[in-house]
Length: 308
Image 1 (tube, rainbow, N blue to C red):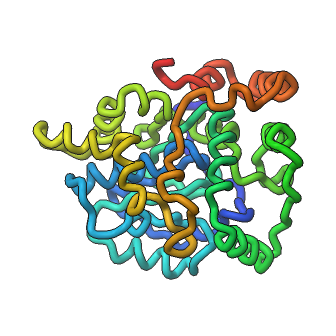
Image 2 (image 1 turned 180 degrees about the horizontal axis):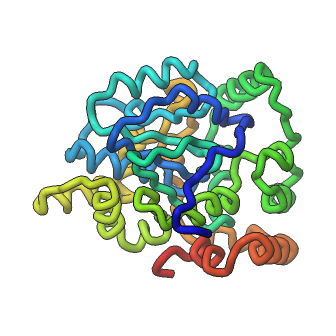
């Protein structure tokens, strides 16, 4: 790919949790930070890091999700969400789960993409759904039905669900995409990693060297932090501290209390959760699709990170 290539908005992502057309009215500002991740790949973690770097304090006046609502989730009117962002006077950091080929590209905006081993992301999403209150799921279903979104019957078990997921392309033009598609999402960013405002992060690297990755995000966003403040900010972004402060950090896209247990939103954050759950058939299918769809360097990075 030519180093002059730029991202293009090719597809409309319109599924149970996302409507990428909601970006149509978004007006960028110099210095905006767009956090684009597949679900359960460190989204809230990255939002917290951005909040700590932007505000340079560890206690916030509102819930984290009030500062950085999920723009393309059709749970609330888009005018309300855009109004939140328009009213902000601080450096804005915007959450999306839409791949780069479904959101607008701006030269004056910093893009953060966070990846995770696809198998772990899949297992984490299963735990995530179990933690949803029935009324949250019911609200999501009502919204999807009102938008005439085709709903898929749930798979019989985790192994069948994994086979369905890993086999899906994630490309809207090739059928209704599933909400969680790490491979395609990663490809849309990987091919533009040469651009100075696009930065690829990995869950494993954040676990292994949180301070190093926070400093990397600060440099990417052009944010200066006083040396004496770093230990406090890093401690506040630790998995343990976020779990302890889950009542204000767990997202609340639909209603104030969408989870059975806020702390369970930050479940384990471990690498290799898929072991003992996925069988030989699933792993063989996974390996074949990874080899078929991804270049070797991307496939290795997606599973291990930059330092794996």
